[in-house]
Image 1 (cartoon, rainbow, N blue to C red):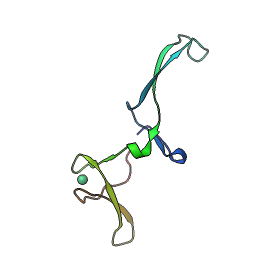
Image 2 (tube, helix red, strand yellow):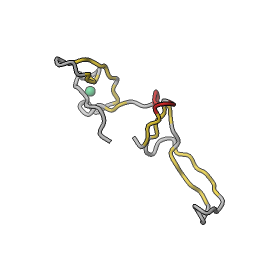
Image 3 (cartoon, protein in one colour):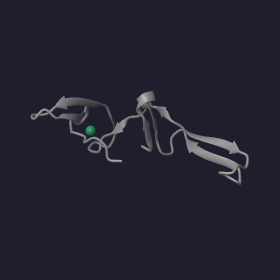
Image 4 (cartoon, protein in one colour):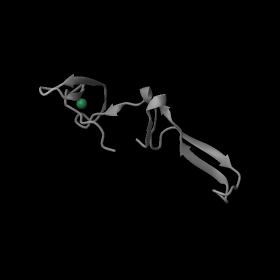
Length: 85
Ligand SMILES: [Zn+2]
């Protein structure tokens, strides 16, 4: 995940939804030419990949014994820690 835009419920994912822009030469880019970049997509179109069953996973939230919110894979019930990268 390259970037998250919570206010607009959108995310930018590396290599997903690439856009091409044809640009004339400018100060910032004296060569001009064709620039590719990732455009944001809606967060609802993104799924978490479970590190345990290695697939796209729906998740369930649950409070564990000491009251901490944890995230479980619906398929294999393994807790998935929030975020790395
Ligand atoms: Zn799983």
